[in-house]
Amino acid sequence: MTFLMDFKQNFIEEDRWKFILNGLGVTLRVTLFAVLIGIAIGFVVAVIRATYEKTGKLVICNFLANVYLTVIRGTPVVVQLLIIYFVIFASVRVDKIFVAIIAFGINSGAYVAEIVRSGIMSIDPGQMEAGRSLGFNYIETMWYIIIPQAFKNVLPALGNEFIVLLKETSVAGYIALEDLTKGGDIIRSQTYHPFMPLLAVAAIYLAIVMLLSFLLKNLERRLRNSER
Amino acid sequence: MSDKNGNDKKLLISVENLSKRYEDLYALYNVSIDIYKGDVIFIVGPSGSGKSTFLRCLNRLEEPTSGNIIFDGTDITDKKTDINKHRQKMGMVFQQFNLFPHMSVLKNLILGPVKLQNKSKEEATEEAMALLDRVGLSDRANAYPNQLSGGQKQRIAIVRALCMKPDVMLFDEPTSALDPEMVGEVLEVMRELAKENMTMVVVTHEIAFAKEIANRVIFMADGQIEEENDAKEFFENPKSERLKNFLAKVL
Image 1 (tube, helix red, strand yellow):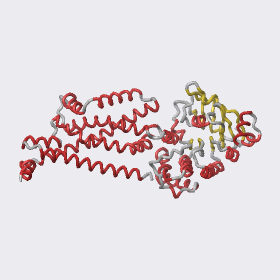
Image 2 (cartoon, rainbow over the protein chains, first blue to last red):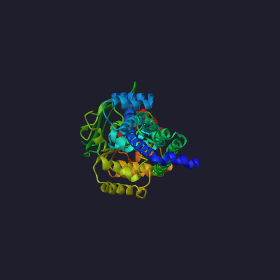
Image 3 (cartoon, chains in turn blue, yellow):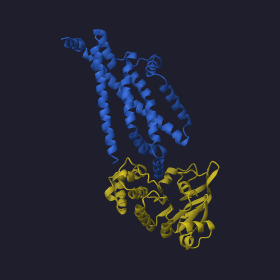
Image 4 (cartoon, rainbow over the protein chains, first blue to last red):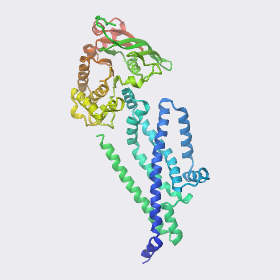
């Protein structure tokens, strides 16, 4: 049977399945840490931008945030990845995974920032007034009162952003990082059978995305239920 | 200092020549008034007369353009004053309640005391439950704001402000967003507060209620205090023509 033989050749012989498994590990690690960096950058930038829009303060910070957003959203993530690896870290020996995490984190932060900003702007100004009238300062009110509500409102959009990020990490092969996609491609180049390794890679991405969507839906429902 | 009845009263808030200008329009112009401890001051007047602006300037939710507000001996319009410290002592109740929808009622109540006044959760909860009990809502402590009626929300909002143990309570049209049948329960809570000698400044359209519990009433028009008097005189002997007209329409 050719199917079984193909399978054996592509995944069993010479332990080729390890390319897939190790690649998956790299992809998941890069995505997870890039998401965390993206959230951190995104929330800070969103608060700066929303503060500027509402109060006219933080002019310089807002300017820098705007430059960041324009540059990151205006250039392809592959180019950003290449620049960070070959230009910024050119003279330093660094782990490629680390470079990928930094690049995708910075990239994701720009998109998260705009999502979160829209969430902050959607909260009734009365919430800020109520927080301030109790004696909380601006940042405390943001932290305890505005951001939790904004986060809940933008959770679907944020989830979508993370799903996009997971798939975007597949270009990490450009800096020869052996992620899931690269792993499948290495098998293809060794066996000259593109069908099986690439379909396996696709199936794994699909499975992770479906799992993420399911988890997000659950989280969303849990958060909504708490209000009713 | 003593009031008109000769009783000694402690000056709590002294407003001096307060103005608030938007572009080329004065929402408030040269408003001055002294508020004493235990005063229940109602501010009435037509829409757009600046009464809400005045109230919101008192805790600087609205930044005054000029003038001074001396609260308990401190000029809180001074930029060097930490307004957040003083706001803890000025409870505010909003027309739209502004409860925090992502927190249970109890969390709404203890957030301020725990985070700002360094109270333990247990102590804050105990105090909050005692106050909840007094407004008849202790069974709703674990509910979320969206599960409550308007009247219940406003009573919770009042309790939230009271949990900070304020020296004065500011009410910005507390019953205007309520269904008519729920107004009574909120007024009842305010009545109780007045009885306990809480200092209150209330912006409202409930003229009959002003008549009942206010000791002083202010009539505002065009951003200025048109007339100010103790409640009895205010309603029985209005002096200005505008106030007479206003009272004729609303009473």
